[in-house]
Image (spheres, rainbow, N blue to C red):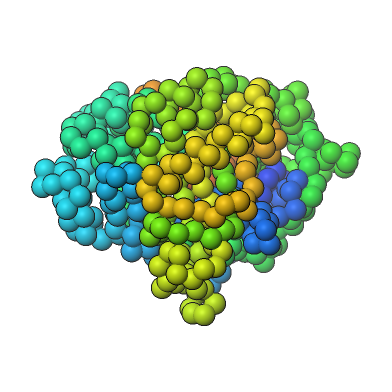
Length: 539
């Protein structure tokens, strides 16, 4: 880590960050910790971006991401910002990663303890399946280890540069990440049981993609989850608030309820932003924590659209139908994370590709109050089994859907049909929710309005085809001084990846400024040579 006192000498010209999503908040916390003047501007009233809560029948229900992994990476980000993660959020590691159900074809829990998962898979589908799970886990870990530092935690690299980072002498390693084999096909080498192939294929949807079109490289997501899933007291919104607090403590200015209308470009460089109210704020650097499509399609001004190539609509990732619920339930014994699988997985993705939500969907259900760290009697769901408390619980239920919220209107009838299909998927596995159901339904239409130029795509570009990961925008754009962060940029979607994107963007800002300062120092004749801030004392 660069020495703190040296970092404080860095050029303090202002940084403007557009958007208080996880990536923008991380950039604000890190850059303000280095002594830069940071102003973060967010059009909504609260931090988080996709991380948000909505009121449903008197209860605040999480309406965004619910899975928190890669805790060490988030801890390192807090430390780099001069804080400790555990001082700002209360975390509880889950014993059960998720509970998976197939109507009358059984239920399977995966655990944080690998050996418990092996045993569970064996009891569920037999000895060969247990061996298959072990070989799959080894392969997923190997893929992760190969690209962790060379790609995931580094700036974006095209294949030649990635091969250089991995090592030209390790050509076998490049083949081992299986960029040309679909995830679905690769899973067939480990699992003959279609239920297990379906379970582990679902990890492709974590980045908004189909397992039938996603490269087997994305099996690494299973390894990431197997390293630990944590529940945050107060939901992931509490993490967003914690990052906001760290950024403010470090001196960042955060302005809510204000929208940026234009990024101003002068001599090929971003030099200011104009707010929707006409106010102009000058900046030496601008980080855009919106979906990159918003830049590419001119939502931040015609000149700023040159920053990135627009992404074709057919390359969008999945959107979703999301039900936020405050209701009583009975029947199925829920964990915090639950997945209720359809009986025809291939049809699901055919339906989505045809432009509609699946008729027989797989439904993810987060029981937000299950497995919570609150002691009794504050949390009646800590020890009670389903149906015994008689009290309403908060649920978030997600069904994948096409990202066509800007071209298709989901009618009241279609919303009702989707709700009925979702409930049928739960009922087949024995879970009953009260009727009438107190809920709010968020469709691709609402997501398209919240995240303009996306059609409601929640994960940026779909990871379809071997080159998809390399085509996702990196932190630097084609306009000097204009950077990107967030789940739509490298390294990808999800809370940990969005956080890493914010870290990478902040490092790019620091690096580019340090290079500029070093250039100007070298251009001066005479005087004392000064070490670059990027070579300051290590902590």
